[in-house]
Length: 216
Ligand SMILES: [Fe+2]
Image (cartoon, rainbow, N blue to C red; front, side, top):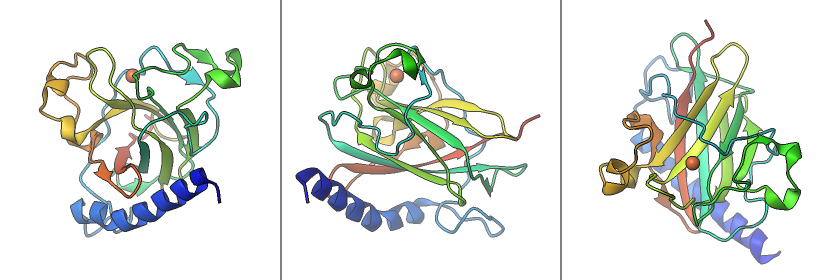
């Protein structure tokens, strides 16, 4: 087994151990159908700008550190809900994630279709689909800050029957700090977009719930 395989295997084991912690934080609803661990009280997810570095048709992959860039490993799992009550797990949602490297740079630092770029210029961006339970997960590295932005992840979610969502999520431990106060973008994100990343055996792991609005 390569050192990279060992690292990922170890990281996965850490996530399994960390999973009950997420459930302990959730507030289940008696009639919820979204599962026992993370049916919570998130309302429709707020929108935030895609910024200037969104690249269309990013690779289908759950490990978006395609070029093995250095950094602290990060796992982010998620649940996508929708329906008229915002509590129905949504399967087959196209979930895109992109973010900066540990030095705050995007790869590429540009936009447009993926076909414009060489493979060696594309990193830290990818997409997957939610499973039958509305769940998804990505592996990557913790992004660095840039400019006066707080640390953040960019997301785009698309599925038939619901409004598409472009948004950003943040690190809970930066909430209320100077990093939040100095950031002019997305001034007042709702509570569910502050992810509580926890240290694991190898890197950090966090969980997010997105709630899509039904299409009009
Ligand atoms: Fe950004």
